[in-house]
Amino acid sequence: MKWEYGKRHRRTTILRKRLLLGIFLVLVVFLAGYAVMQFGQRDLTLALQRSSLKSQDVKTVEAPQDSSRSEFLMDTFVSIRAVGPNAEQAIQAAFDEMRRIESLMSRHISTSDVSRINLGAGGSPVKVTRETFYVIEEAVRCAGLTNGAFDITIGPLMDLWGFGTSNPVIPGAEEIEQARSLVGWELVELDSENMTVRLPIQGMSIDLGGIAKGYAAEQGAQVLKEYGIPHALIDAGGNIVAAGPRPDGEPWRIGIRNPRGEGVDDTIGPMLHVVNEAVATSGDYERFFIHDGKRYHHILHPGTGMPVETVSSVTVMAKDSLHADMLSTAVFVLGPDEGMEFVETLDGVSAMIVDTDGNTLFSKGFPGMD
Image (tube, rainbow, N blue to C red):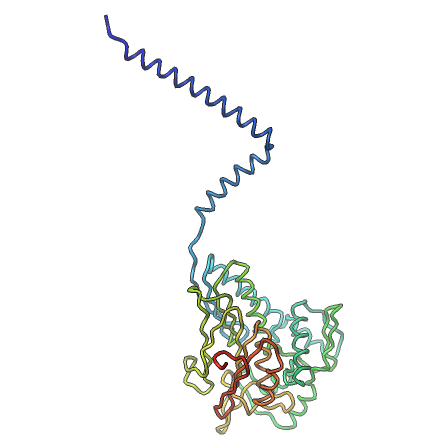
């Protein structure tokens, strides 16, 4: 007689496993049905989806990127450093936004809002985007506060001197007076209801060079924030926006260029420690030429039509880049004494002025001077 216990035992084990599996499946079906009755099919599906999404989220978490890039736009080099997830895509989006603003506010782009306003001078009001209207409105407000020291209608004088071209010239007194007759911020007609701007005299022209870069830098920083970038620094031709701290949690350190130094690394004054603030510097070293030993630069006084002769550079700190940019130009034109008096009347604004003799003046609240 053959010993068959082993075979019978295996068959019994298989039967038991099948029976247990059947019971388990019945329980699963019962519990699933109970869950649907209690919570509904949609809730059960959402719960399963959430569980699936959580597992996917764990897999797709990206390490922060530290990316930097520079491009030429708005007649200057703009650099952006961003540290965070998808930093490269965020930088590209920020540059795209800044180029979009340039396309609205550059007087050198024929289809821009500003070019259309200038072309229509002496004619009908020109409808513009809400952004362009806002920037022009802020510029006109600043002109009123500074008695015209900041004047965006300075376009005819800029054209006369040829700044921004390869052949700047020193115009004659009669030419300057003729161009000055077309300069006057108080003549700009703004209609906020219809979003229109009008220059009443043919030949008038707007130049937003002293404010548009600041606005573009601010909007670029906003794009980086929308992309979830916690640490970023934008430098748009001396208009700097520090969005968040450095990656190590410390403030960004910004040096102020010495206007008579050997280069950008030659600094003057205190090192600025900046988080979520803007710094703008206007200097006579940015665009200039030397004739018979005398420096002629692009920051013109609207009242005289000549380059300002008392100031070499002005650095302004403010909460946003648009106002820092605009105020640095306004204070430059006002000069050391009047400019500093004006800064002292503004909340949340501080400044450093370097005059043409190399002296430095600081307003109350300027970092490192308390």
